[in-house]
Length: 315
Image 1 (tube, rainbow, N blue to C red):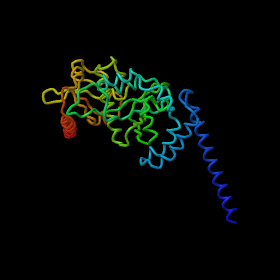
Image 2 (cartoon, rainbow, N blue to C red):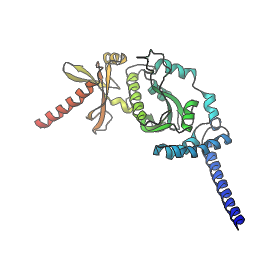
Image 3 (cartoon, rainbow, N blue to C red):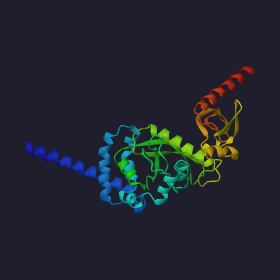
Image 4 (cartoon, rainbow, N blue to C red):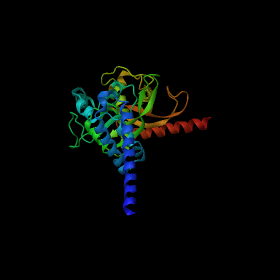
């Protein structure tokens, strides 16, 4: 009886295992068919990675990352693709010479992609930039690694396989290739499980956009429909703040100050109606040119509140 029971149990396990493997095989083939042939890699390698992803998923703490981990592994370009594509000399040169002058913004804007798959960036605590270190502290930042179907950075790809990454929702404005409207899209940051890096990425991207709007890098103009382009630009005039435009259009004299890094970004300024707000009040930030002290943001914010209180008393 025990022998018969053992055979029955063993047979059931074998059937379950075969169904599981069959399910993995079908999933791999289905997802791989959505990739270009050169991005797929070997079926054997993809199956192995998918099985390991299923096991690795149990160790992932972040709920969003955990829920989508296996699907992400299934839809990534292959290891062979990332190793053969590699970071090009042009890409490395851009990191070395222009990371602090619009690197993130320009890289995303010039990267041709009609798939709208999430862009991948690798966080690195030691950027390979040609700048002298301050107090011997290396620069931190995000290296562009392609989109999930074309990861050209093998280190970033391995970090994703290891579950060492975060998903950042709605942090990257991108233009839809069909409607030409902008929408906020997801970014995957490899090399960290710190969700705070999403906020750091957003600030870094915003600062790069500011530099690009001031004429740094290759661009000479900014799309006035770009979501961040209606950010107010101000200067200090006497004891008051004077608005001189927004990031789509502001004076050359002010741009020069921005190019010299003589400005402060205030992530939150006030609720305002802006050029792109469709008549609604939105939370907006501000760029204060000619000031390099974060306290200027506090003065700007509370000064505006006082103006609102004064206006209410008069009404």
